[in-house]
Length: 414
Image: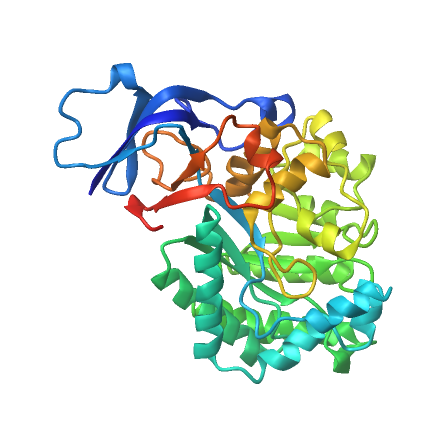
């Protein structure tokens, strides 16, 4: 199928010489073409440029979309979600309003443990149907790729259940989906005080079956105060690497946990959350290929301190932003909102923020060679906006959906 989008007010984030990420000052680079066209053929981007350079007869046999007054962006890449879950947790939200902390709710059996209890009771079909509705929702807001984690199982049977559901989603959704095994998301109540025994289960029971059934690309650990130690984390990551699962770590959300350094040590593709990131952590990241990934929705929802994004970029680091879509601490997968938060809460310029939610977040899920920018040969995952005045309007005008049409894999979806 051939699609020609013509008369585009501004074609945003085009690349003639694609890069895998943008770091430091380069995050301010956002190449665009005014009065542009975009040509898509057989799922790939095959041409773009100014309308004056549109080849003759190119529209013959093509679906032509007129984008007068509208802009075209590469689809968002959401590199950190937990969107396969059994039920919402709005009652815990009320507990938060009343002043209970994330850790206090967890100690009472809430949080992740609450979702794990419900996960054991729900069928795979119900999980799949609910998750597919969430995928349709995030597509409508402009997301074209998403990473989904397990971690609400905490038993071998239920972790595998979650990963099988994610595999079904991959097979049936137009989204590019990556799966992450997160058996070490929390410590089950029966293993409190003896968590090394649970780590043994993750390594010796869960991992071999995850690998045997080819259910995940990545492995993750919640390395933080009150959860898994650096020693636990390193044991799990070493075991995962033996099965070819690259690390992605929950790190430094609650304290200076050592999780960032552990991620760098084991070649993590990303380290995520990062509210507690100081000079030592920045120095470690500067010497690595690990993508620092900030999750604004969780910090905002939980009333936590914000990760020092401005300091990280000024030090020369890349920064990605993702939604952390989950029922307990970030109940939204709206990446337009994350784009706005990047500027409003973290003081990123619109150009930096757009790079954070497209190219850099694509890198954080291992797909920036295929997605995240508009370049010839990349997968045709783009969205067309409503009529908007400027690029800056995207993060500025928060709270409404500015996406009019979505194209994924070269097909019009919405």
